[in-house]
Length: 473
Ligand code: ADP
Image 1 (spheres, rainbow, N blue to C red):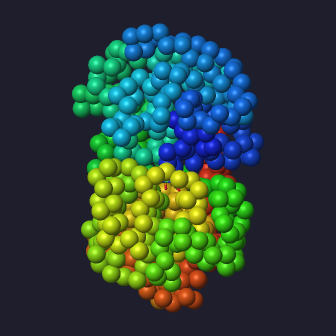
Image 2 (cartoon, protein in one colour):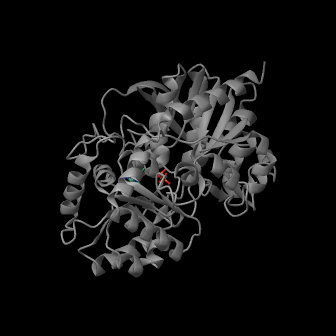
Image 3 (tube, protein in one colour):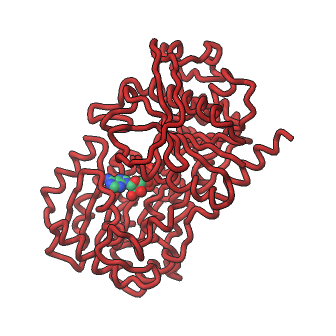
């Protein structure tokens, strides 16, 4: 079984969020099951660390955006990189502070097409597994421009809120026939929608948790693609993501000042004191430490926290936020930082090392998401003994079981309503739990026994690939 993954980011080369993590672990987990699992990503010259050992494997050119654009393909381990400096040699992956790059329509049409040509040139595959809107045009090119090819395609939707919607006028510039621009094709309220193309032309569609697979069929969480997904419902499944248990391991994590193991959490307290010192939170080191590590966008429900702010800060707790994103949300948090300098610290940056120290040093991990396709952060938090406090949606619902009020059994605290008062109740319950050390430790220990490694999920993907390639015979 040979599978090519096609995605816009992959750890350890480039990551802006969970997609990068998944692409760093899933292909490898499949390899351990005997799959010849390869990956194609863009070569972001300015971002990919200058690792030596990139080998040039081929070159080509595509006429797109009204000009001939040459590209080269580099290989490093099992990853093939599409290099086109004009398109990918930028300071960031998708956007700047001013907004998305205006030529993203070209950057990711080009990427999908160049990835397809590369896979064909390298001898093809049984399955081409494309991820999110940035790769979603690949199945469209495959079926319309290269109909003779036999590869099956799987589209995984990691977050349906991001669809790649562009003016219809760009169609003429991305080498697709006009016939794809219909209501049953790429057309979307008069514009082009790349993710919709993937939904229509892929053989199978998956998303990253069973609950989210149901939720995206509803008008509330389908982001106007629920109708077309309904048409393809028979081909839609939910497979939960996992995390890389060798990378995210407090017993070996090189980013931690103090190592500890999930079964013996003593070293965790030392990490907590370290991270509090680092943040300059010294007045109440005995309070439970809550952490947020997140893209600061409306999806993540930070507004629920802001709406409950004063009541929350009236509780005995400390809070550290690490994140970047929406300037409005960043500014609102920044304003709060000046009000509670000794108990709340905001770090407005992407910082992998601090993220590790915070997972290790925090007692609770806050994730009040309005929607959450899968969520990896709560799985990492469980592994590091930080009890998740989450809204019951998507993958959070599938991974976090609320502590039962009578038995005390559960691996976290969850709440239903997307309101500041429900959020606040959950935080109050967390603070109360912390006040009873035995009860708190029990929840922590249950969390440590949860297994959200990739093994089970990779087996589910393999079964899906097998059913797809057998479909023909
Ligand atoms: P999403 O993919 O929606 O961003 P996930 O929970 O699936 O959310 O994955 C988020 C990943 O990105 C986690 O590995 C988390 O630790 C990491 N992350 C998010 N923001 C930051 C940040 N500012 N610095 C370091 N890591 C971050």
